[in-house]
Image (cartoon, rainbow, N blue to C red):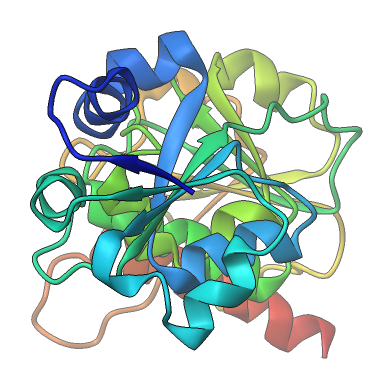
Length: 254
C-alpha cells in the first residue's frame, strides 16, 4: 500500500481541494466520504470508490480491513489525515467518490423539490428523511447547498446512495414536467397536509429556511398545504416540516 507522508504529495493536494471547495467538487465531479458508515453505504449501493484513504495507524482495524480488500488504497500519515478529515475525531477512513450522475427521472412516484435550501444540516436531514420514507428523486434548485459537501454527507447518513439527486435544476421547468401532485408547504395555506390525499404520485415542494418558496415555484404547485401548529411557534425547521410530510404519505399508504 502506497503511503502519503507529505503535504506536497499530489494526491493529498487534490483531496484537500475537493474536501474544502464546492467549486472543486463541481468541476472535478468528485466528493470525499468520511467514515466507515458512509463508505460502506456507498459500496453497498453498488458504487465503487475511486480511492480509499486510511489513517496510518488504522490499517489493521477489522472494520476497515474489510473495506480495503481488493480496492485501490493508500495510507496517510496521521497528521495529514487529520488535516484532511472534516471531523474532529476521524474514524480512520476516507474515500474518493465520483459523484453519481442520475439519469433523467421518468415521473417518479414519490419525490421532492427543494427551493434554495441553504443550510447543509437541513439539506442532509431532508435527504435522510426522504430516503427513509421511500422517495426516489430529489430536485435541487440552483441556490441549494452543495449536496456532496462534507456536512451534508454526514447529515445524510448514507441517504445519498438511495436517492437520485438532480442538482442545479430549474424547478419551474422540472415541476411543469412532473405529472403528479405537487404539494407546496405554505404557512398561509387553508388546507392541512393531513386533509390531502397523498397516496398517488406525489412531489413535495420545500422552500428556503427564511424566505420560503419563491412565487414562481409556488405558482407551479397543484396544491398548497400547511402543517397545523396549535402551539405558540410560528414555523417549523425546513427539515422537520419535510419529514412530517414525507411520513404522512407513508402513513396514508400503510
